[in-house]
Image (cartoon, rainbow, N blue to C red; front, side, top):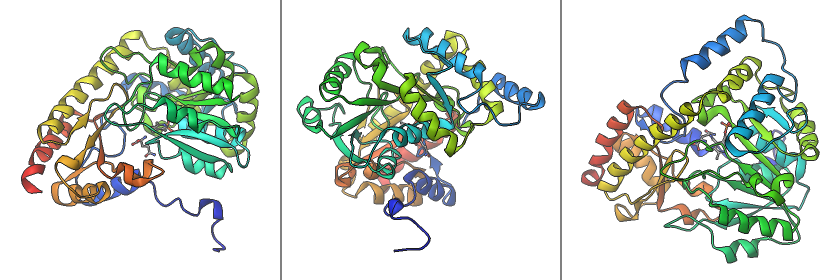
Length: 388
Ligand code: PMP
Ligand code: GLN
């Protein structure tokens, strides 16, 4: 046993996003790995953040979040989903969705509690469940549609189930859960007296005629769901790390208890920019989705042309490919080869599965990149079959 680290972090290792980004930098590869846009935040938001700094908004914010932002989050929730929450008691501003997830799990999970997660899952869920003393129970989203089998999810619920994490639109598959699917999950949550933690950071990254339905919209679930989002994806500001958790007062009290001892408060000037951002006109949100859809379609076509068997995502900004048609290599090795030999970086999703072998034939490409990056990437991807 090491004197320098606790057993709870025993098997964590370095996140796959850091590993791939580091390797991409080293080999100057075009990076379609880690999910961040390489185009900039809208100027207007930068000006508001700068103005807030100039006006002296530089000390600790209110721990639960600046009032102006909590009120803007309420207005946004009413405008897009018709869901009203009390900005004083039912909203907590956090340092990104990551911190909101951490605080919610720490606030709600006891030792031995089971938490259902859909695999492939976002990489922070299981380590945090583990740190909280809980036990992650994985339910697989199956190819080619990356949806769940109702029998499998029903079998995952037990009397030990404390919570389910629902990520829609889903990273890395791009699946958007339908109202029917959400209703099915809700019935199980009610039967087993389970709460839901909903990660909806891609709520506005949604394509074609899909519609994002928050789980909280199901009346029986409104009071037992925490809805988490952030400004990272919607406002091209992943580095500002402003997120929030929306949900009933009793859960919020517990979340705020944890949040005050993790960061106490999140970056003050960015909260002012986030408040203005959320109030932007509907056209902003529509053009964000339309613009991303064009990028998705461009990259999808390129991946399809070379036989990488892409899955067309209904939401998020990732395309998951089945590489088995072009290589027998495992995804992690293939991803490294692509970076080193072909100058293109993507994320191998083995670590997003309880049983990594389920992800060994998959590879995730990110399309929230500027035209120049996408065209450079396309040139490199088109060469893959010839060079393998
Ligand atoms: N959840 C999912 C599904 C994500 O893809 C990400 C990464 N962007 C996060 C949460 C973390 O969001 P944030 O950067 O706001 O902490
Ligand atoms: N959410 C981003 C992705 O899925 C990365 C976030 C991170 O680097 N932790 O790629």
